[in-house]
Length: 88
Image (tube, rainbow, N blue to C red; front, side, top):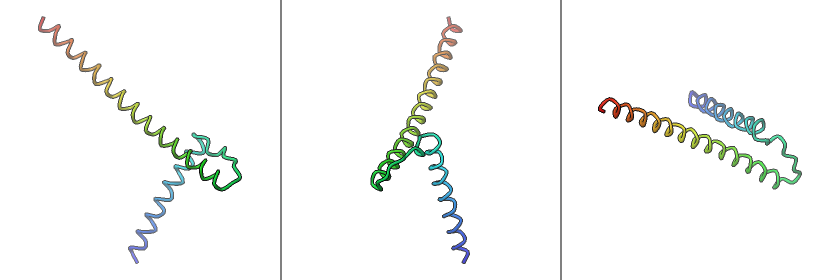
């Protein structure tokens, strides 16, 4: 019986994660504007919205990585120029 409680808790946790993702897609990526009538077209529109959401996440991660790399490079060059001034 305790396994069933754990399974229900995990199911609820997974459901909340999916609903939160759909809510974000509706608010930020325009998924709420889908007004198609055919089921195939609706599924295609939803799939494209999920795809675009993932692209934005990937883009954000790449941007953060580049900014972090630039910051590291900037700090490294500044430190390198300080050492040159001290030794000169």
